[in-house]
Image (cartoon, rainbow, N blue to C red; front, side, top):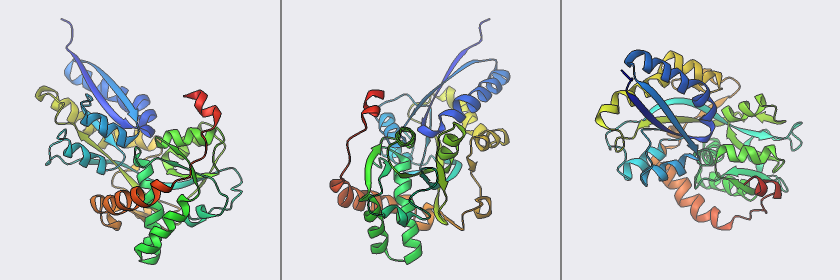
Length: 312
């Protein structure tokens, strides 16, 4: 008899493409087929985390979603794709770092250094990208925890954004722009910076002594998963949290979900979104009320390099 055909659709933010397609998907297909006899195909859709949440709310057929921050799962709950009582699970972590040109010509050490006059900063777009939101919190939070004053943190964020000249839709899109020669520096995930170094991209990684640790989450999309498919979706999430999953994620430079301060060597003072009041509060304060109303309308973006336009 022909084995039953199964299909699992996983939506995941841009920087997870390699670890999922090269390691996690093949491992899960092998385990699931061995346990059930099913013929399983996994389809991966990758893009900016916020954009993916919007697509799922509009009916995209994700069974499992991996988002760069928990706020995007809140969007799925608002869109009634995920039940209110469903808890997303943290599957990995990565600190935010500053990527600079070789030799670090601007002498960048901390986030405040991104405000130097004349420096050209790239940024993942906070309207579409979870990395863009995390980068906002990295700059804002480091100043808030240093000074204790929201006004100081907002001023720091504004001073850095005066230098932002190009926006990428996702963390990976921003990295591609940097690879093509655009910009002097940008804030991104340590994971993606290390993957780029492995590919031979000429860059240096600056780890500020005080930086935020991004926590990535997975959730089953209740509104899409048929009752008979729930065990398969759950088994996929369980694999991410298993020893085999942790090992795969760590090979692609992600830190384990339960990593603590001493597991972030080289960072004197790692902090989290919880240290800033938690995602719902900080998203409202920093992303919606401050960045969207005070900074975004005044952006002075440069022309997209011709090379990038040709690349589409």
